[in-house]
Image (cartoon, rainbow, N blue to C red):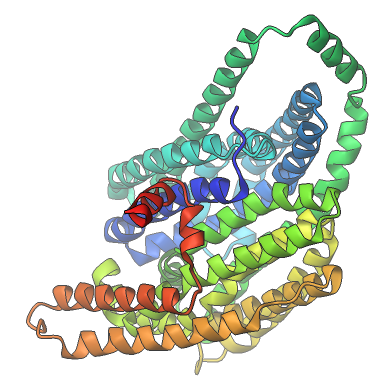
Length: 533
């Protein structure tokens, strides 16, 4: 088992995350062409309720496992790590089986009364088997992350994504002749198959780790040490108490987000109905927002999620040593990387919103939503590292309150704005933007008060200046480069020019330095050789 550094672990997850996001756009582009925006809306309507149930089952369990295993490994208690894994598995499998049964039993009532479109019934039934699968996968991912080995999580997620894409599109195509509802259910069934294969990949890697460990027979002195460590291992009750102590506040924070997502789904569709929009049209509009626009905005989130996952064990170790300088260093690295990687995407989505939506979805009408949201996506990109830092520093309750406050604002604005015919679906867009700004600022303020963290404001000024210059170059290229007779070529060349200017500027402003490149696996090796020459 190889333990990776913070940067290397982040980059492993980042590579997998970017690949998954890029692959994930295959169904995002192809699925609306198979089942239409209305079918995507039906698919999305069932998902928030499922997320609530999965949050109840797993919630903060992966983060708690990662934190506890990191502490056990740091103390040399490997047997305790395995014990934490086994206790967590028993807990999540039991909860998963219970909620799967309840979901199947209550499916007619949930889809007929709670959700705004009863056609979601088939999709809801198709997603229920995933609860136990995700419960098991989340435990193993937390275990590997606690050991600061990100390879199993990264590789299994890539395998899951590939299988999901193939099965999702195939099953949707096979069931679409039976109707839109069955086409959406086929897509969800394909997602379940992908989750199953991803879980099997994790189990195989854990089995491989066990075989390698068994080959290393301990020396007599080591055997005595291991026996003593085993005697010092906590009881199952002690593990459960510690597990719940860490997981429950985190689960509470995630529940706020999950319930917010569910209420957002219900309130958005019902508010659109109050504005005089037909159910089928409201479902299609919601499908466009949640199934097309927001996934596009979250594409750079592959880095922020990777940073958040890697931050937890790294900051937990630093906090245990009371090493504030390392905590501040990791936070500044994370925020700078999140902004630098997300900024060019935000600019491209803002400046080229219409051609981008036309190219990806063959639908230019939804580009207004993308153009409104793109500049504010930067708040989403830095939100994950900030929240992960609060959780790693034992302040999940503060993250929960911040998230709850943002959710209340969002729900209120959705009801007020989306029910107004003058706003419609754009009212929901404005509510999501305000929520992302409010929660991110609250997380930043909480972190600043907790550890005296100071944001490097000059870095943010430099990023803003570089974004403006890049945006001007992209816009000029799209309007004036001599390829107007071939719009797709004009589109890609203007992006290439903008990205080239962006990279030159981030090096000139020292947002990224040669030292940063030297730390990157593979790239760092190549850069060192090039520098010597």
